[in-house]
Image (tube, rainbow, N blue to C red):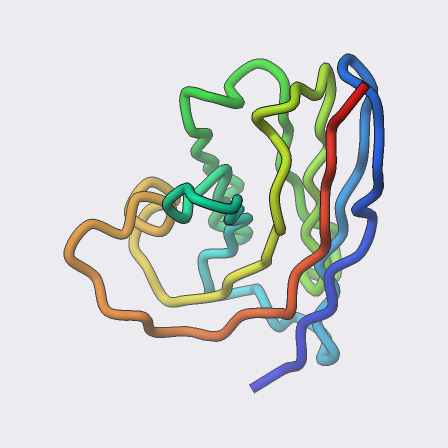
Length: 130
């Protein structure tokens, strides 16, 4: 399996923007997979923030980020981005990229009843604070 490297996390103020990147070591690593951004904050459950099926371009967003975050993939299908605008303190957490075989982006993000299949990166820290 390809190695995943996330980047782009930073300390920002509320209302600012960040762009996260998830880069796979092999070309076309995401071509037949669902790719998602998940965040984990202290004391909170892991949340599937946004997911994409790169082959179809179909996407899913958690209600908490809808209208503020945008997920996309590059043409080579080895990088997935998460554009995060109008950041809020509740967006703080470690953001990880997860690759798995799932039929829809919602299935990938919600993961209700699913096993911990697929593979993930180490994550990148996003801190939103004034």
